[in-house]
Image (cartoon, rainbow, N blue to C red; front, side):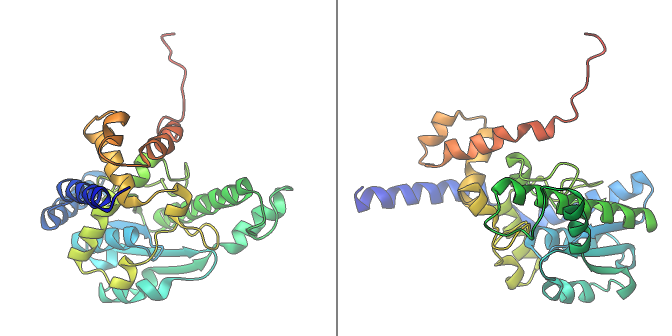
Length: 284
């Protein structure tokens, strides 16, 4: 490939990025804050529970939440497995005025280990030498344990659970059913990951959180993009053209996206997650 062709391709992708991904962060903020307030009012709730990992998605959701409701109505849960990341978010939570008694920082490792002891072939401590399916199974257990704790806290505090999923994760099916996708409302699910970064910068989220490598924290060294085999930057573009603009895969590939097949196949193989449970049609 000549340098000139490579440069032109980069310019094309940059131009596509500039037309797709730019959002009006002030407008998004107002829209989401209004959505949160309206949802709580309609459902008759004042309190909200949110799980905060220390990453940009959950921190962005928290920043919007604190604009919508009083801090005393927010309950934060940092449910870690390997090591606590609470120090990264403690400052923003305290600055928002969330009472100390509303903050739960707790390890889920004892609960995960209980499952490992009960299920005969699910042992060890996420050793990288394990089969991939073992790691995924343990990751699913972690996600579902967090869900159980969040909903128990919601019951305790008469609250709704605030989800922290973005549109990229949703379209890719990059979630655990009845785990991290379980929520009562989703304030940022309409925004792609690259758009979340834009909103986070506008909201003034600390740089160390924005710059973190995206990870579900399911095992040591795990990252989202490593699992995907492509970047969020490219993935968002392809997903946008395929789902929002209804372009064919061939048309998308012609725009210069080398991983278009991989991205759409990743999404389609997980599409079943959005359709469960399957039910019998009573008219059949």
